Length: 101
Image (cartoon, rainbow, N blue to C red; front, side):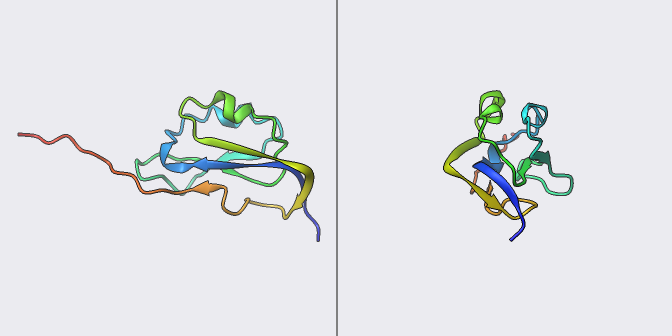
């Protein structure tokens, strides 16, 4: 199997993301990128994780909306190149709209 060495994985709460993109330049290994064709239920683009995370916590520390949860592996693992499966967590949210009288 040919892959990329990864030291951790990030779970991204897609529905809490407001698309500020602060995490993109903060990611030193460059494994986060914003979606271009997918949006959360509030209409914002959100980050995606590709293999190669170093578990440096930069995304966790810079995010104003606390959308990242990071797990660091005890031993580095080799993951297939490309998007990390199940890193984007979609959850049910209630969008409340202001009623006009």
